[in-house]
Structure formats: structure tokens, C-alpha cells
Amino acid sequence: MYDPHCRRCARLAEFRDAVKSAHPHYACLPVPSFGPLGAPLLIVGLAPGLHGANASARPFTGDGAGPLLYATLGALGLAQRTPPVAAGDAPSSIRADDGMRLVGCRIANAVKCLPPQNKPTPDEVRGCNAYLRAELAAAPRVVLALGLVAHGAVLRALGLKASAARFAHGARHALDTALGTAVLYDSYHCSRYNQNTGRLTAAMLHDVFERAAAEARGQGD
Image (cartoon, rainbow, N blue to C red; front, side, top):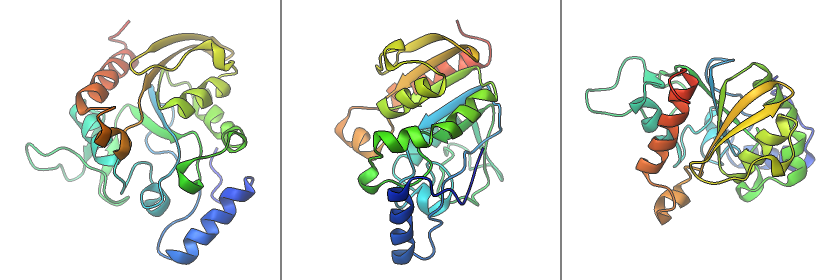
């Protein structure tokens, strides 16, 4: 499922090499998924960020999106720190050795390698789709896609056409697939850009995650 030596996408492999030369202490490898395999809720992001997951080797760790994502997960009991954070403080993912663990959920990306300008090509998304397919084969009951690219990658990994479900923030899609029935929730990506422009607020993200987590726990629709 995870190959730290994968170089199937030449552009991404060459870009990783160039970034590694400039930042020798960065991991600059395909980033593995985080959390228990087969957890009932699978969260799918876009790709590692330059100074975030590409550096830390853990999704949403060390970048501008991580604090909001992990605070949301922490508020819903899906993320915990060891030792626990102080009362009133939210879990925040800063480093891969910060004691963070996920409970009942797992985080993967549509593309495992850092893309130039944070924009993978359609061929690169397709080339990485086998890894996402393997995640889905582990039978998560609910999937939450962060952004349009992740939404499309999930549909492809499930063997469905793009027309099977239209992306919209807060949308819920019940899908019949070769792997059985799956439920897909959509959210805008929790990127710093979306936060700064107001396209995504903490309340908006919390609402989608709350509904997806409840359904994954068997408490929803």
C-alpha cells in the first residue's frame, strides 16, 4: 500500500529531489497515511505541502491547514495527544513526534508526493490512485473528501465516473460501488487560503466532520 521509494511520477520525483537539495532536513518522500488502517472514517486530502507533510512525513503536520483540521478532530474525539494537552487547549499537529494519534479515523491524500505549486496534474492523481484504492479496500464506512481533487480521486478509486456525485461543500453522497455501499461527504479544503478568504470557517468544517463522524460511528443516517 505504501512505497517510500515510489518514483512513478517523474515530475514529482524530480521536484522532491530538488526540494531535498534545498532543505536537506525535510523528508521529501511519498507521505504515508496516518491513523489506524480500516478506521470507519477515511479523510482524504489533496497532497503534501512544501513545508508541512513534505517536511514532517505526516499528513497536515507543520502547515497552515493542520491546526484547524486537528483542532476539529480533537473536538470530536477523533484526535488525541499523549501526554494530553492542557485543559482548554485543542490538539494541534506541529511535528510528527508530538504524540498525536487518531481514533476511529485515518488521513490519506489523493497524491502522496509534493507537487509544484501544490497542483498535481490529472495524470499524477491517476498514477497515485492505486494507493487510495487500497485504503478504500480496507473497508472504511464513510469517506470525507477535502476539496474537489480529493472528491474526484475517491470516485475514481471506487470505480465510479466523475458524474456519479457532484462536489459541494457539506454534501453527502450514498454510492453503490464494487466494494459495496460507501458514503462520501464533501468539504472545502482546510487550506490557509480558504481560511483567510472566509470560504471555509471553523464552524463549517466542524459541521461536516461532526455529521461524517456520527455516521461512521453508526449514529447517523
